[in-house]
Length: 331
Image (cartoon, rainbow, N blue to C red):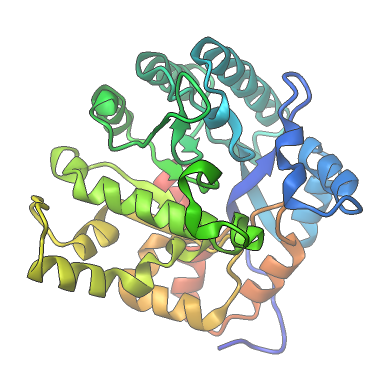
């Protein structure tokens, strides 16, 4: 349901990306745009306080939570380099936030190639730099470009314990699977990226976390998924239903619907579709949905205009627009 007249609603946006040239990581995003569009979007990734802030004002976005582009640190298979770049980029993000703390916050980038270093960097980013959580771009390449490690791996036990201790969320952001392990996409390059592969890869990763027993061991953990939950709100009943019939070795305390409604939040980033939002609200409730745009990979104006036209009750609109973010991130 959408109204024809719009009254701008105060918003906090949670999935708003940035790049940097020192270290030079911004070029990772070139493949997401046409050659004609890349120079403009490259400039948008590098901009924090000029055009971005003007757009936020226009869209009634009170605060944006900055996060590094994808795949970011997760693609740096050399662990010392990943550790160095993560620290430098977190320092950069914190410095940009410090210039306008009334308008910006940030998620930490983490070198998951080295679990101990990632845990230490998470603690430094939250306690020393004032960042409000972490964003990890899916699996990490470790040691070489073809070795991947997902976040349910036992090596991350200490990391998850620290995340729960600190009381901050982890945003599980998409990345493409490796071509070498994805024959289903051979000959169909359009299946990669945000059109399809991002969603399938991230939804599968989230299900791995649920099935690993992670949320039984750490019931206070909160994970954020973008794009209205990477299809999980629409398929979670069938996932749980079929696993109850044929668990195939699954050994967890609750159904997956419980974990989705207890340990996950979802954002509207890049999924400005009202029927999809209504289904998500029915599945997980308005307390677990948060506004986002996905700047500059999506149009901030489109995100805000769509949201401002929604015909939801005032309480739910306020929760999704800003209240849930204030609660979850302590803003």
